[in-house]
Image (cartoon, rainbow, N blue to C red; front, top):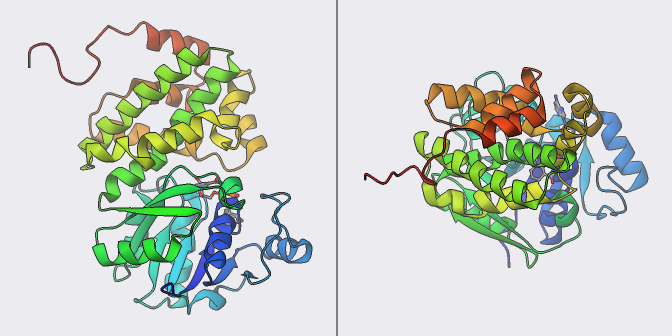
Length: 337
Ligand SMILES: NC(=O)c1ccc[n+]([C@@H]2O[C@H](COP(=O)([O-])OP(=O)(O)OC[C@H]3O[C@@H](n4cnc5c(N)ncnc54)[C@H](O)[C@@H]3O)[C@@H](O)[C@H]2O)c1
């Protein structure tokens, strides 16, 4: 029998709801909270989440817009867009969340005001609570349909990572552990920028060669920054690195890729973001730019994305600029060493 838990999910979007459904399927007591009562009313009255069309909510899954209803949970999952994580966690702290509650972050991005990884933001507000990051190649639409998926539970505390692995593993969701929180979070946050760029190449009608080159060189950039920030290089070859990059850059489920396609087709950036909704890659492009400057890391694809997103750069000209950079050795090594 499972290590049964009372679980709360903050954010009734596609991803929060899909993970809540998965936890309900293994018998946990799960409540989804939203700051917006209208979202909850719509889900409860229709039995469906509009972000997961055609999927019926299990009757055991509870919904609320009262934060007080989630304070007794053993585990609280944060599943709001990265720009809202700090404010939602501040509300939890104000409401008096117990120190024993384990926080599990499943959002991907950086805190927009500090550039912190989201687990750092949560830890700063809730210094006594244990924190786990659950990440990996996972479209909400597929997890909600119980399509086999593998994730990684990353934490510095082994026992907490093992507990989260046990709680969230189902016959359809295989959870690995990893102690490299930096690597796991960076992979999840920055691949969204590469997915935006992959969408742009699709919108420009470039080919498979271009996308493969972009994804591979993009992974190199993620690894370079990750290493500079203290992450483990092996993590970037794993589920939360190359795995998440593949799933996001190649699927129409990805809002980052879909926004990129519109941009590549000539839709102005702000308009494309407005049409698609939560596009973490757009925000991460600005924050990755700050981080690469701070850690003095060469990231030409990130530079190009930053120019397109924030400086009116022309996508095709940026592709040409990337292709005509000085030639170099493939990895960061050289012939001389
Ligand atoms: N959708 C996926 O397949 C998927 C998979 C893995 C990770 N993620 C990550 O999970 C996070 C959420 O993504 P999503 O797809 O569920 O987004 P979504 O747009 O479907 O839902 C976001 C939820 O956050 C809430 N929210 C928005 N702004 C808020 C605010 N200021 N205060 C409080 N709540 C607010 C919304 O009401 C909604 O309930 C993102 O970081 C995303 O990168 C998504």
